[in-house]
Amino acid sequence: MKTVARAALSGTLVLLLTACGGQAVAPVSSRTVAVQATLGQHTVQSGETLYSIAWQYGFDYKTLAAWNHIKPPYRIKQRQRLTLIPSAASAQAKAAPRPAPAPRKSDTASGKQAPSEPSSSAPPASDDDTVTAIPAHLTWMWPAKGDILATFASGTTKGINIAGQEGDPVNATSAGRVVYSGSGLVGLGELVIVKHNETYLSAYAHNKLRLVQEGDKVKAGQTIAQMGRTGTDRVMLHFEVRKDGKPVDPLQYLPKQR
Picture 1 (cartoon, rainbow, N blue to C red):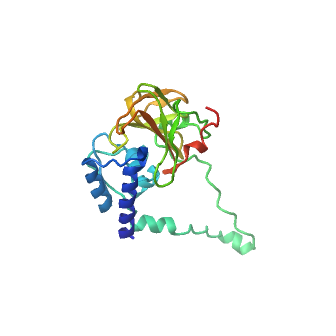
Picture 2: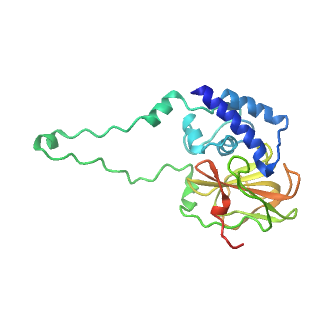
Picture 3: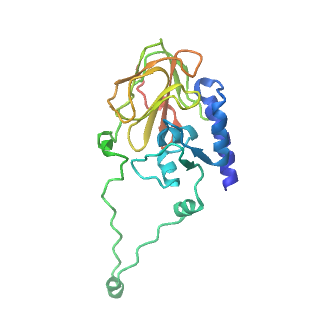
């Protein structure tokens, strides 16, 4: 199982290095990432967050947190080692069916059917106190004005590329909270990742200037960066949407009319 998982991770990394803007980007710094992927581990570097690491390897952040027994608010430390492969125990726990509650003795004796276990009405655990400000139902907006240079293609282009002029505003596609603001992901330049709810995240890459920091709350349409060409060969915005950690076509969510 681990051998197959490591092979898949290596393949995922190659795709990640060629996905953005349709061009291969593999500087020396990516070699460390490739080795870590092959070994099934990642050593946390300065500036990284659980969200950015999960994004880099194509995982849902909640899955990566579960594999490493990290609980909300998902804080990690520099030089901390994260496993990129599920342990046997976590895999078995996920696969094992939940046992049905045992009937009460009084119900069994009287011939009545035991009542089913009540479902919990408690909300799911949130990663911080600001999650209540993140909408459950999203209203999507275009992150920038300009012609579409490249569209989503599963396995190759993980988002869309939007043309523009250097310094053009880059806007949050929906309300949420910034979970990454930095330049640590190979080939994406100055990058902002916004968490919208427990399911959706969006990313804005190749910026000239980032205008928000990690932890900032943003509104739909708020300017969060300026368009640039960091990590690519022309001015553009590379925009991605991920659902439960998997890339999806942003055009399925954005308004038809621009």
